[in-house]
Amino acid sequence: MSYSPLLLNIRRAVVLALVAAPAAGWAQQAAVVTLEDARARVRDESWSIQISEEQIAQTELLMDSARAVLLPNVSAGAAFTFNDIEVELAFPNPLQPIVPYLTEVRDQLNPELTDPSVFGAAAEPQVIQPRTQLTGNVVVTQTVYNARAFPLLRQARTSIETAAMGLEQTAFQLERSVIDLYFAVVGLRRFLEISEQNVEVAGIALARAESALEVGVGNRFDVTRAQVELATAERSLVASQTGYQVALAQLGLLLNMDGPFDIAEPEELPADAIAMSAEVATFRPEVLATDLQIELGEHRIREQEVLWIPTFAIQALANIQPKTAFNPNLVRWNVALTADWQIYDAGLRRTERRRREYDVVMASLQRDQLIDQLETEIDTTRLRLEEAQTNVENAEAAVRLSQENLELLTEAQALGAVPAVDVILAQQQLFAAELALADSQVRVQQQVYTLRLLAAGR
Image 1 (spheres, rainbow, N blue to C red):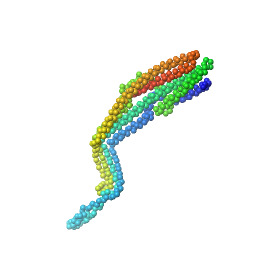
Image 2: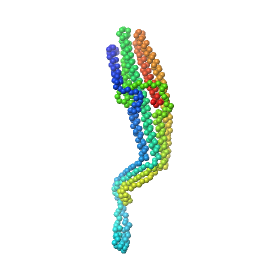
Image 3: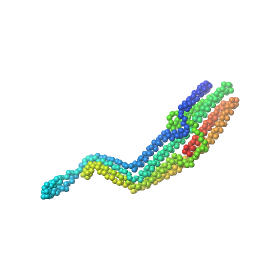
Image 4: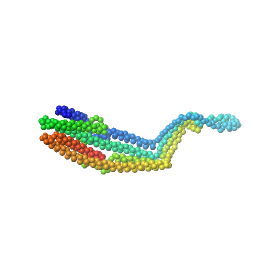
């Protein structure tokens, strides 16, 4: 299918307008975010960071739980009881049998003395168990000494530090993701620029083929082939623009940014300027988190070791119950010093201690394995950097050769020595070489920044 020159020009203008208009509006309204800004922002505004901060706040509750072992414990209870049988007990009056004797003595000694018969009245029955009764109690227990409380406090502190290190580990991984995604956006923007140049070159080639056809030195096949090449270049340009905007949106999601923004080209760092750390265990949060896990395991072992020590507490008890024959007071209270000593537990304590010792050994082995993995990752990144540097050299040579080849074929076409299809193939080769060069250059800088983060923590 062929197009007239007018329709082709209109189509070309529409495509360029659709591509350039969003980019122009984006550039005018969007804030520019540098790589360092993005790395700093992801540590403060990322959703993952906010979730980790909430986890730290939750872990801090462990300290309150550990302190509760040493704080007073107060409990209260009440009961309303319905009894089927009310029990009463009648106690005999011990003076009643001797009343006659006392009366005779009174009459003989002094009749004006008190009549002893008043002491001989029958005793009233006393309630032993009421039919219904309301009782209550209050118990206050204050721990005086509990050896287990101190390992628990240390475990709580270490758990809080572990959660904070987990936050740092999350931030470290997010920062690495920012580097990868940021350079992906940089690469897509370079692809977009190269695609725009490719559209211009394809347009020039089409105009040249049309001119040659008009003066009678060209043919319709060359024009059609140039039209197809221009359409392909325009589709590549639209795809590059879409990919660029999608990558920006993904970066914005990672940074938790609202509204349009754009990026700036990162500072180019020489590969030999990376200061390697002597030991990854001194700064990598993954290793430091493992160190805290080992420390936490040691505190848990100590917790098992002190279980044989008695626990001492002061307990105050107050009971409120109805008055009866055996309970003349409405409130009874007492204070006691209690001791709890687990002498024999069938080996459960020893088994639990050994299990926790195994956990510490496993954590130590995992730490050594993790250090080897991190060092291997650094070496692998260094090899990828060297590979990318080699690819840059090869791509630069390919671009030079492709440019020379295109220039020679363009001159030969003007003289009628070669067909237009050879020029179009040369354009395609140059376009592919420029894309490969841009990709290799971006990968070099990406590996430099990644290696500096992995090997030096910055």
